Image (cartoon, rainbow, N blue to C red; front, side, top):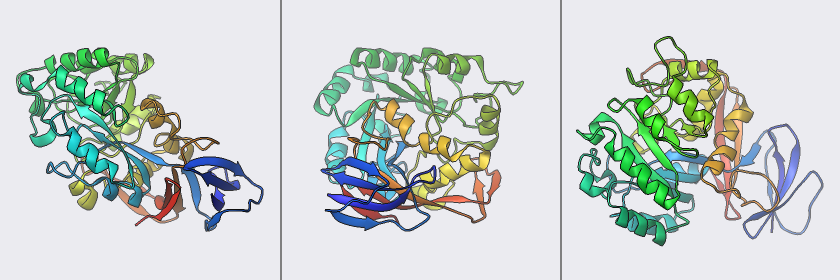
Length: 365
C-alpha cells in the first residue's frame, strides 16, 4: 500500500490518496497509516493521470516517431494514445514494445496496412484490408481503441473521400470509433464531418489550413461541424507541427464550440524543437487562450477516457486505476507559439512534477 500525503486538488483541498494493488483505495483529508508514504510538496497539484489522445509513439517510422516513455510518464502523461503510426503489418511489433514501457500505451490502428512507413498511405486502396484489420483487433482487443484515417490531399492521392468511406464501413462492422486527420483539401472538412458518427473523432480540429478550417468565411462555426458535435462527434486538438492555430481556437471558443480533447500530435522533431514540446505546453496554450484550469484538465483526463471507453482512467475516485499526475502552475512569463508561427504570451505555465503509474512513483524530467 502506498500513501500519497499532502497532494492538493484543483479546488485547493489538501488530501491523502491511498493506492493499493494499482487502484485508488481511498481519497481522504484524514491521516492514514500503514503503508509506504510519499510526501508531496506544498503547491503541487494532483489530477487523474494525463491522457494524450494523439501522439506518435512507435519509434521505427521517421519522421513521425518517438518512444512512448520519451513523450509519456517523463512529461506527466500516464497514457499515450498512438494515432495510427502502425497498420496491421506492424502492429505486433508495436504491441511488443508497448508492453515493456512504463507509460500506458494504447493505439488507433491505421486503416492502411502499411501505416506511416510512407506519408501517402491511402493512395493505394489495396492496402486497406478488412481481414487484416479485423485480425489485428481480435489479437489486441485491449491495445487497439479504433481506426485512424489521414484524410488530406497529400495522403489520399486521387482517391478523394473513398478511403474514409471504406474506413467507416470497416469501423461499423467492428463497432469501433474512427479518428480522422483533417488537413489540406481535398476532401473538404465539411465532407469529412458529414460521414462521422457519434463517438468518432476529428483531430487537428483547430488547424489553420487555408480553406479547410472549422470556421466559415463570416467567422462562424461551419454548419457541418456544429451538426457533427451535436450528434456526438468529438473534437481533438492534435496540435502537431502544422495543425494548430491560435486564431481558429479563439474563434471556436467565441462560437462556444466544445473543447473535448487537448492532445499534441507529438513526435521527436516537434518535441525537441517545437512548436509542440509537450502536453503540458499545449495545455498552457489553452490557459492562455482563456480556458479554465478545470476545463483544460478535463480535456486531458475525463473526456479522453470517455472517448476511449476506459471509465477507470481519467478520474480520481475509489476503484479507479491509480494513474496520477502531479503538477505545478508556475508564475513565469512564457511566449507560446502555434503552428503558423503566431505568438501568445502567458504569465503562467503548467509544469509536470511527477506521476504515479502502476502504484510506482516517478519524477518528471
